[in-house]
Image (cartoon, rainbow, N blue to C red; front, side, top):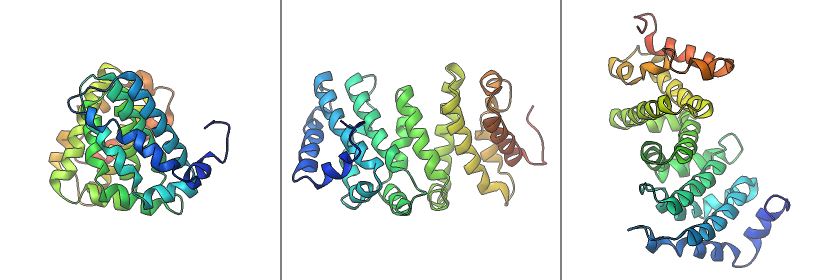
Length: 253
């Protein structure tokens, strides 16, 4: 009924023991995560519970309650990469879907959601997913990181130390390498926006040679020319990134 019942989120939250029982569904598979022993049937059952948490994450009222109760922390164990195990990949993707639904930082409660994400280190977990997981999980994890980087406090967190900043840049570099093998316009747009946000750090202090070396040259040659041909917005973002990275010093060959 999640697509037909408009009041499902508050009904779930306000029904006695409903959230507790859903959490029990999620927690019940913890012991099968390492080594991976979870069956597809068990994964599907836990994913169904996570899907209902996603319904609550999309609702402004219950999103606030989920964060205040720190409920998303129960989903973090599913974010650890685990090779090609499909049942765990479905759990990971569904958990990322819940976090993605929470990542609406432009609503009145958005700053508190962002603080919770930064406090509980969502970024490192998403970076691992971007680096080591399947295509769909990589895409959703990149979207979450992109949304965080587009916030001033998110950008401050991600550039607080050179190590943290360049760990993000290096993961994005490897994501672009994967996209050269199997292009995806939406995923590419997320990556370009991430690089664009990161490049703003150096826009006022001058280009950094270390940063320039980590920006994939494939973004500026003809590698993605075909998929960008009809997407003028993403192509324009790429032009802005080109200027931010190379400025007036030199142009890429």
